[in-house]
Structures are given as C-alpha cells and as structure tokens.
Image (cartoon, rainbow, N blue to C red; front, side, top):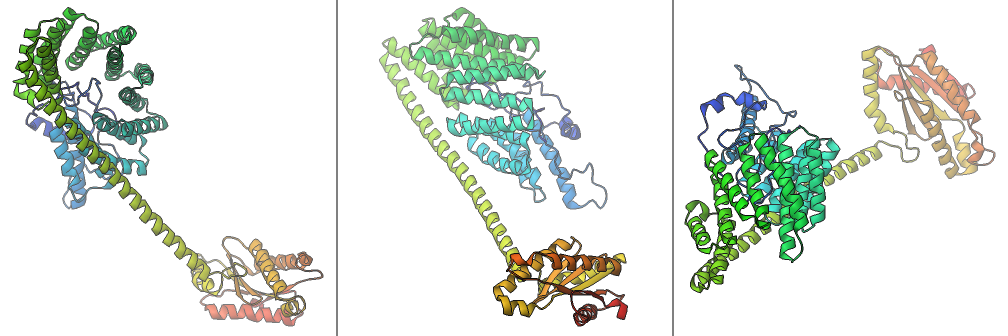
Length: 623
C-alpha cells in the first residue's frame, strides 16, 4: 500500500522550482534508509515544494514506494539473476524519486522515475508507482499535461489492483493538475473519486486531503458555501490526526477560501465583513501553528496569506509589517520565490496607501528582475496595476505602454491555457479510448473463450439427455482409470439399459420415448456423485463409472437405482406407462484395457436381460 509520509506543500502564486543542489554522496549512501522512509526533510527548503500557483498550501501527492508483490532484493549475490538485480535497482530509484519529492528536487525525482520507466525489467506494479511519482513531480514542475498523462496511466493499474489508498492519492494529483489549468469539471470528478476511495479504504489522512482538494475545486466553481463546508470538515478531521502539517494546511486552506469569497463579494458590491472576520481568525491560527512548530516555510506562507486579509480590511500598516516579516523569513531561509511574492504585496500596500510613485518604482523593479520574467501570472498582475495607477494619475503614455503589454500577456496566457486545456482533455480521451479498446479486446477474447467452451461442451454432450456422450467418455475415462490405479482404489463400470424400450416407442411414440430417456438421465444424475461419471452411450443404453467403489457397494447403488426406476411415476409422462431397467456391473482389474473392462460390463448386462430383466448381474463373478 502507498503512504503519506513523504508529502510536501505547494506555494502561492508566483512560485517556481528552485535550482537543485547536486546530489550528495551522503544521500546516495543512505538510499536503503530512504527506501524505508527514514529520512529527514531538507533544511535548505524546509522539505517543501516551491512550484504551484494559488493560495492553497497542499501536501504533495507523491507516494513513497508502496510495497507490493514485486520482488525486492536486498543485495546481488554471485549468480544473482539479471532481472532480479535490475528490479532491486528499480526499487532504489523509486525510493530516491520519493525522497527527491520530500526535498523539493522535482527535476531529479522526475528523471529517476523516467529512468525506471525505461527499464525493460520493470514490473507492472513498479511502472504504476513510477508513473504515480512522475505525475506528482510533473505537477510540481508546472507540466500539467504530462502530470495528467502519467496519473491516468497509474490510476488504471491502481484501480485494477484494488489499491484504494493509491487511487485516492493519484485522484488528488489529477484534481490539482486539472484545477491549475481551470478545468474544474474534470477536477471535481477526481476529488469525488479521491474522497470515495479514501473512505472505502478507511484512511482518515487520505480523506482529509480529498476533502481539502474538494474544497479548493468547489471554490473555483463558485460554490462558496460548499467550499467552506468541505474546508471545515477537513479542519475537523485534521485535528484528530495528530499531524501538525495537516493541522496547519487545513487552517491555511480554509482561510484562503474565506479570502477568495470575500474578494468575490467585494467585486459584486456585497458586504464581505463576515467572511473577512471568520477567515482572518483562522489564518492567524495558521500563523500561530507555524510559529509554534518553528516551521519557517509554513510561517512564510501563512503570513503571506494574512497580508491578503489585512489589505482587504484596509489595515495597511499591519499588512506592510506582516509582508516585511514574511519577506525576511523567506530571504533568511532561501525562499527566493516567496520573497518575490512578498515584494509584490509590499508594492500593493504602497498603491493602496496612495503612494503611487513608490508603488510604480517597486513594480518596475520587479519587472526588471530576470527571475520574474518567466512568471506570466505575476507579470499580468504587475502590468495591470501599473496601467491603472498611470491612468488614474493622467500619465497616459505610460498607461498605454503597460496596457499594450498587458494585452499581449493576457492573449498569450489565453492561448497557452486553451492549448494546454485542449491537449490535456485530448490526452484524457485518448487514454480513456485506449482503456475501452483494451476492455473491448478482453471482452472479445472472453466471448471467444466462452464460445469455444460452449462448442466443446456441445461436442461432448448428448443433445437429448444433456449427459456426457461417447466423446466425453473417451476424454474422461482414461483419467479416472489412472487415478484409481495410482490410489489403489476400486473402479466399477455399470451398463444400464431400459427394458422393452422399443415397445415404448411403438405404443406411445418417439416423443414419449425421448421423455423417458430424459427422465432416466435425471434419475442417473441424482444417483451419481461428483467422483462418478454418467454417460449416454447410445439409444436407451447408459454407462455409470463409479469411482472408489467396491463391487458390493456398486450392487447396493444399482439396486437403489433400479428401485428408483420401478417406483418412478411414469404415468406423468404418459398414462399407463411403466418402465424398468437392467444392469451389468464389472470391477476394473489390474492392467485391464478399457475395451475388455466395458465389454465385461456389457456382457453382464445381456445376462441380466436373459435372466428376466429388471435386475443386476455381476461380470466379476463369472470372470
């Protein structure tokens, strides 16, 4: 099963992946410890991710290498098979990829997962785990199309293997990928899948993250009431887990939901005081949790979100103080992307306070920063603010410049997003179509197998009585004889023939004769055990092969059988009808052939006929 012990958190808008330090020898030396989940989070970046936009702080969706029935060898002894050695290497790479997720080194982790996928000795379970890891790494790197592709492929295996916890985690990853590209309907489908799988498997931690994702998606869909309800459910559950990260994330995420609701209400001219009041209390609690836990990364995130509330409430001095505090923590700990985000907030505070020249200078300085150039969302935000400030100040030339840049950026973002959305949906449809084609092929193969079995059954079944026929006897009798000889068990052949059956046909018709035969087949079926064989050998003649049965036992069985035939209500078939049968029994001798054995049983049957019918004769007594 997969685990949640290596989860990390994404960042607010403007965050990008930091440059990765070279892999240390110490890390390589502790790979075996990593495989068991014994590793500390990197102190350089707090073990947190720095890639996703949006105000939500989420633990990563990447699993540790889940134990399954794949082979995992601890070492390579002399003569160790190459395939097993490669699988051991694959397990190491999977462990390193999961550790790279903990350390926020997503380029490295993605490369390790890709290396696993390229290995010809990979097992289906290992492939699914590699794709699950790769889906999360690509998500953190902003490669949403690749994240969806690998996530859907991983989900197929996890669904087929019944790994509900793994399914819940991958659904959460896919929900985030679709959400970040504004494809909220597919995102909603995945959060529902995540929640269902989490609840069925009984993982409260998985249920918490599914609720958190669901709150995020409902917020994006404009369902504020449902978003808050789900966020509060997630918070209540987080407080029962004993997980500090879950407790912090639940408060930070719920606070962010309130902030977005308040902004939406303000935009509509509605009163946002209630949302701001409830939200700022929750986000202050998130700040307190991060300070209590001495978690610098979480504190930076929470204070950044607190600034948003203070700005909406008009508390600009406190907003400036909190943004400055957050920036100091970010710079001290090397969180470059968060520091950039704080700079943007400080510029917004200056703008809100009416210090237009200072705000413009700060924003222009950010636009000149090469590290900001690739952040399209932040560039849009900055150019829009600059356009509005220059326009309101009557500096129309500067306003026009920023408006033109804003137009180009928005058009580019729109095209980029539309193209990405199209490719992601096409990707999903292609994978779904491939899955349906595979299911169709499996169904067709199953239908062919069933048809072949039906034809085989027809070829070995008497069409009238539905008993096995001579072909079935030729197939099954040698095996029964072999088993009896190996186990030194007695095996008896019983030839059964309906008495005066020609008279039945002549006096009552062939239809009645057919009903007599089918009734006789039912009587024989009830008289035999699973270890026996009842066969229609032709006309009104039947054969019983009685496994592990002595002659005395066979005689008792046959006497009961003849009694059943005599007392059967044949008048139900046709008025005045009465039927009897004659039986010949032969015990298989050591080394005896099938033809001789059955021939002796048949000869005993004729002796029963000659002796007056409606009786049992033994071939063994005359051998």
